[in-house]
Image (tube, rainbow, N blue to C red; front, side):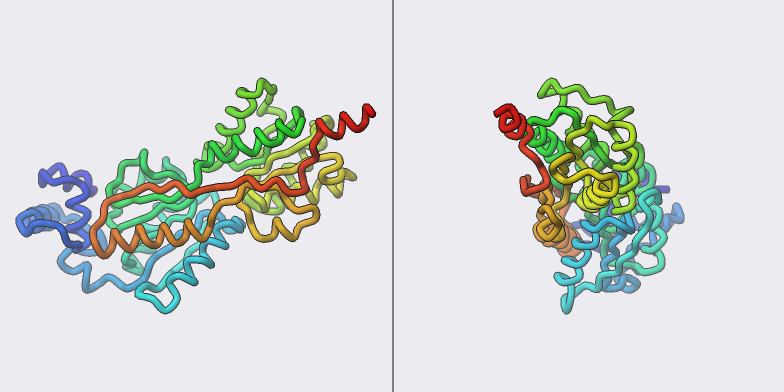
Length: 343
């Protein structure tokens, strides 16, 4: 039996059932008695029944990080650790591979650690649809939009990945580039990659620039090595490329190394745009053009959303974080260069 089943049997909303199972306020005593009675009769198990949850629950928050090499997530975790240090919560962080199921892992750890709430850094909507239904803990999904999933105990904080990726491709096109490659994650396993890919396609179509994904989209892990391997494949098969958009800064820096190892200069031969706005971009030579995500805003907002859900029984909220395109020196104005060459 899931929370949705319990809601159907009791006649109360899923959000009400979730608050009862988590021993949260803003629930009538009649609703609490009814839901608990049905839960006991049906042998429903979360970690225990709601009557005992408060006694068993620790003061911890569980953060499940999907992607062991994702530097953006590492920065977000650092912000979270700083925000929770010396406070009411103890942050427990668990890293899993990009291909693993984050919801199943969270359910397993929740049984062992009994946290107050869960933070998901990265995820797949398919995994949430399949597995999140019987998770009653307040949760926040970060870098993925959770509004379409419809869970009353799942908030989200994310950048508009589609619009931001479209802005990156639009910037390259505005600089005169037409032969553009894209490096990104699996479109089957990563919602973030799928949205950024959709933004790329949208920008190409809007500008009337042809883009053949079979030739010019390379799948890679969100890592330096992944970016390096993907750029190597692109340069070997697409010699006419003048620019590449990588869906993370770590991919972009790995791609830049591959370009240099292949005898190409950045940006003289290949212009490059990343995504995330990691601090290392400002120290790379040349400074990496990138889409800046506001990690401090994202960390503070998701912690506030989760705290509101835990302490006050607040419902799910979905927040879009601001982003900014930083041009920097890794992109060559090809139109200007061609004009200078003609002169």
